[in-house]
Amino acid sequence: MSPNSLANPSVLTQPVYEPGKPIEDVARELGLDPSTIIKLASNENPLGPSPLAQAAAIKAVSEAQLYPDGGCFRLRQRLSTHLSLPASQIVVGNGSNELLELLGHVFLRPGDEAVMGNPAFVVYKLVSLLFSARAIEVPLVNHTHDLPAMLRAITPRTKLVFLACPNNPTGTANSAADILAFARALPEHVVLVYDEAYAEYVENPPDLRPLIAEGRKVICLRTFSKIYGLAAFRVGYGATTPEIASLLQRVRQPFNVNALGQAAALAALDDTDFVRRSIATNNAGLRQLEAGFSTLGLEWVPSTGNFMLVKVGDGAATFQALQARGVITRPVGSYGLPTWLRVTVGTQPQNERLLRELAAILKPAS
Ligand SMILES: *Cc1c(COP(=O)(O)O)cnc(C)c1O
Picture 1 (spheres, protein in one colour):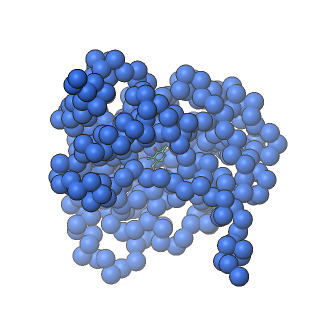
Picture 2: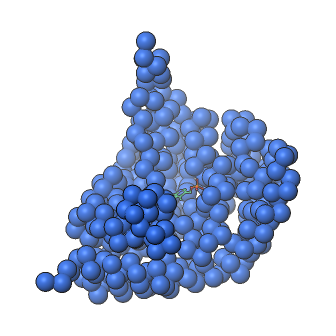
């Protein structure tokens, strides 16, 4: 008897997430020197990890024999100050991806529906399908979430609505007024999962805490993977109502967030200088890429995140050609955008390299 015949049917049909290619893999496959390769594929911080976080993680290694604090007490206290929200309303996860999965555990039953944009972060769909819920994908308009259409897509079976601002892979943002009105218009039986993975890059991002204070069913997800440069440690958090927080606490594993990650995240919140530098680097990089793409005659989508969509014609072929030249980007054909590439904003020299290689590929010397 094949183990497949024993498996939960949703496992057999589950699509597989394709991560950005690690530098080591590309170096091995193409016989390139890893030090010459740049990765602009996964929206990581090109400045590296916060220095304060690095030091804190190294210090924490000396106590690696101990299980971590399963309740993330100190980190939640610190986040409580950071967010001006009681610690009882904060849940920490193994990346915000784990919190997305925990939301599935808590809320999704077979036949339920989850509403999301298309394209949107693919994990929303993966989580929905894993719990045998239907992923109701609402096409974006102008690369931006169509909030009225998402409201119309809600039925009595809808449990979760996923909304990212800025959205991945488009980098676009709905206005704060529109998002707040959207959240207020959601019916009682729906939980809004508001993904703010890139919010720290945005000046005055929409603030949904007043809705949480009103007791609305909203969870705001943030991560240490992006601006804090700690993707390897896997730490993310959710800010929500006390009731939703305690439901999520019930379904997580006892030690879901490792001790090095907790120590690093705690220190990163104090590294305001690093955050400031990261924002400045990103803003300069966005302007550099916008100007560079325009010079190459390429269409691009204005972004408020640390990544951009650029229209290159054949996305898959351009991805391969760039990769052969040591620049890893993200093809987005699986997001229904086969003529586009998503590129992470790098440092000034990295962006220059990307633009140079792109120019060489698109306009070969005749
Ligand atoms: C990168 C990203 C995340 C972060 O995931 P982690 O699990 O915290 O690393 C979440 N949502 C979106 C939209 C992202 O792009």
